[in-house]
Length: 161
Image (cartoon, rainbow, N blue to C red; front, top):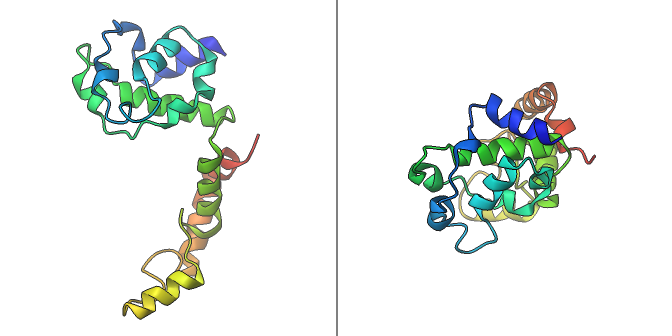
């Protein structure tokens, strides 16, 4: 597993080995100020081939604002590395329950937040169409979306392992 971690990052053009651990990424991270996200630690763990980085909940706290990446003095695409680590984590079966549930909803109804009857009623009270112009309004579009998600094996990624 450990070699795979660096191989995946390198294949994506992400040279985390050039990190000098200055801490600029962590110090400038807006999310890190309010959560347990420590980008420097995640990059260090990836550099050291620590497979535990994939199961670390902090990996999912990044909001992808790219501040760390813009400020890195070595030009390391840190946010891109975190996204690549997330992709690998999902392929290995590590996904937060909340993300898994959102994935299931997208597979079921095409949205992370499905419309319920109460929402439809509120929309009508506001003079809006009860169902907005989304795949929920067009069953054929929803079926196309489901087929696309199945083709790219999104359903397999979202399934519990």
